[in-house]
Amino acid sequence: MPGQRLVLNGLPADERLVSLGRSGPAGRSGFLETHRSPFGIMGGFMQPQAHVQYVLRTVLHGQNPQAALDAPRWQWIKARELQLEPGWPAATVDGLRARGHQVTVAAEKSVTFGRGQAIMRMDGAWCGASDLRGDGCAAGR
Image (cartoon, rainbow, N blue to C red; front, side):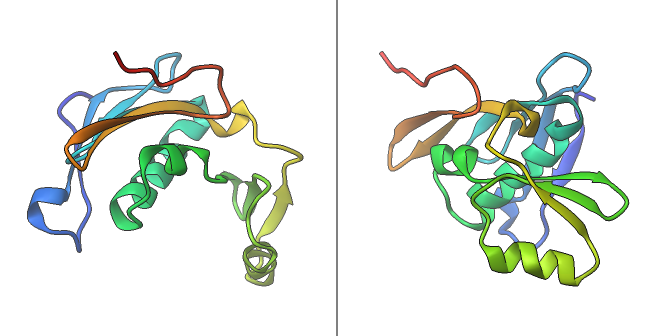
């Protein structure tokens, strides 16, 4: 889907554009670039869900790329069925259940919730990040 665009309304014009560089999830990692952070998260069915969660955490909540990649993720399974990684507050889990969702909490963080890498320009320097769910690392020279 090269050339596709996602616009996040409510942000300043220069921060709204998110470009999709290449398609997934059929064996290739998707690649998105926000206004300051190229990143990719593999994960098949989980890939677009993890991309949305990363963008929300970095653009709307101001997290650095490592914090955004390491944060607990949720996964929509079907209908009202959700799976959450450990680390979500009990109030969040209870609130979802009270709204009629069927929620299970995974035993651990794992690659079933995707895994990715990212870089971001922060305070005049590049910040690299590698997902704790995978076996990579961020290294500079």
